[in-house]
Amino acid sequence: MKKSRQLAALLMAAAVAAASLQGCAKSSGDNADTQATSAQADQTKESASDNAPADQAEAMADDKGKEDGDPGELNIYTWAEYVPQDIIDRFEEETGIRVNYTNFEANEEMLAKLETSGGGEYDIIIASDYIIKIAADEGLVKEIDKEKVPNFANIDPIFQNFFYDPENTLTVPYGPGIPLIVYDPSVVTAEITGYDSLWDSSLQDSLALMDSERVVMGMTLKTMGESFNTEDLDVIRAAGDKLMELAPNVRVLSQNQTQDFLLSGEVSAAFLFTSQVVLALSQNPDLQVVYPKEGLGFGVDAAFIPSQAPNSDNAHAFLNFILDGEVGAQISQQTYYLCPNKASYEFLPEEFQKSLIISTDDVPNGEFIQDVGPEATELHEELWTEFKAALE
Image (cartoon, rainbow, N blue to C red; front, side, top):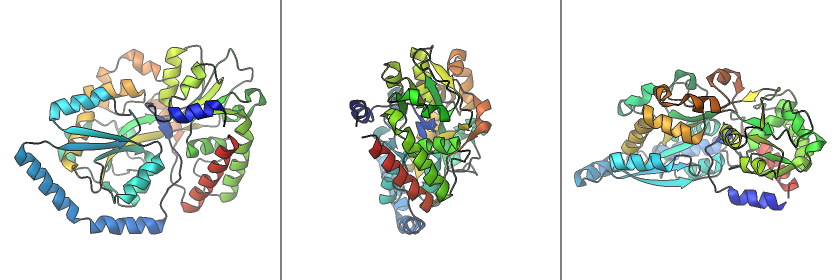
């Protein structure tokens, strides 16, 4: 792989407020390496059922902690630095709860860990919509006790009732976004109007893409007039063939801080999560943003409580904390995603809202990445592995 790709791999540990669509995502979608089969899901549900006494043990542990005057811990699992450190510090200061922060690089990595633990080990997980749906279907997501989260009412309804939580009982939206194309007009000679423009030969060895399987495969499917979520295996194979044709143009494949390669001039065009687009434009306002003619993607990273969370009460306290209007505004201004908290709007500077490039008006026009079933998922994984090998 080119040196830049090796650098990109090193940068994967760095934070980005994120993706993608998937965020956008951060991807608003990531790799689909470990998605469970239906048989695995059944086994996981049985395991979760067998762990039912853990709820009683958790309650006893919580009671003991309260008797000891120790507010206990909160175990957060998400992308690196996705929850700003000042937010964590403030939560610890106000509640006395100690926060343990662990990060993953891909949604599928998170799901595999959650399945292995039977829905335990972590108290709060922030991940992308489609992977939350899989976890919920496997019985690994706990229903939120809204009496413990009075600020739940602050959620803007435009970010509710989505496919992964249609009854609004399992999640709190955290980072909604739309991935877009950004390029340097002083270098790019081709006309960039959509995803298909990225295949132009003038962009050879000058393109940066997010390292997000379903997002990039979805982009390719869109150039063919197809849905992100087609389950037609022949269509997916054809998309894989077309994606291989893009390989000569790709210089960087990175999930985090991908905008830095555009800002440094190492690449001349990039497909970025919402937060990365905003950060790029803040440093170089001469960059051009493209709303792809083939259609927008849309994704929501959301917070949920695992089914066997060891510190459920503390998890509820954290959800209520981030849904405070002022706190929500502070988070959005550091993650650079749409703010899903209507109580935060009065605290958001007008300049910040304009800097986001997208607005809630774009939400109805975006297509979610969703679970496409085991066969299509396995094929996506296979084709993505081949594509990444071609970049080496």
